[in-house]
Image 1 (spheres, rainbow, N blue to C red):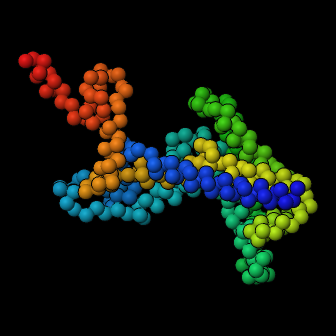
Image 2: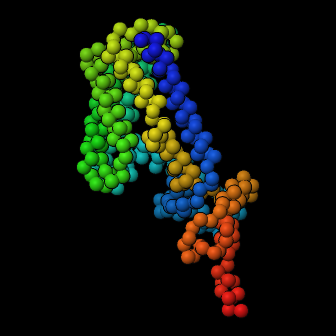
Length: 312
């Protein structure tokens, strides 16, 4: 059973990486999207982002250099990632349960990272028995339980919200409920394991050390094995579902919501637009029907000229 646990863990990490890569590649290969024209755009240079301005305000803007600010972008991204400000501003009751859930996951990710640091120190002896590693172990022991407890509390709250709030339940599928139950079970088993089997996370740290060194050392606890299997299978499962938004949001913000790159001397963009313009038209709306068989024909159709022809 021990060897199988390690093999499942390796397979889960491979599935996770392949799924993430597949999602990104599929997105990149998608047809070019319609530009949203939503302002403010966070990376707009100067003070324009503060009032929703853009480079269009400049006369002959296409002949002038564009100024983009990565700092302005980070000012928006970091608070949104850390505090879910959009949910706080627009759906406050939901924020009270979804923020603990996400904060718990952040803590768990940091906890796993610290386990990795501790396991490398354990394998190499680097910085072992130093104040730095003592601090790492102390923070690990703090973040682990805090992350697991917050995850369970947030997931239970979200499950209750999805069941009782019509604004959520009307748009919730079986997958939404299954995902939350999966997190409750996985984090719940983690809490039990911490309480009764591995209170200092020495067993977890040793497992990570064995994992990265390909050492299939025996695992003495069946409960710990169950915890490992639940964790790695959840990791593999996440990017296969809508929860992949944890990394796909990058494209939503940078490529769609904030994508304001002008199409000037860009053969690559022209090629993508040409592909979309040649898609067949399937709309039956009165203002579209009869204007052409492709979107290129629709876009170049002149309603005024058609009316003049009818008069003649």
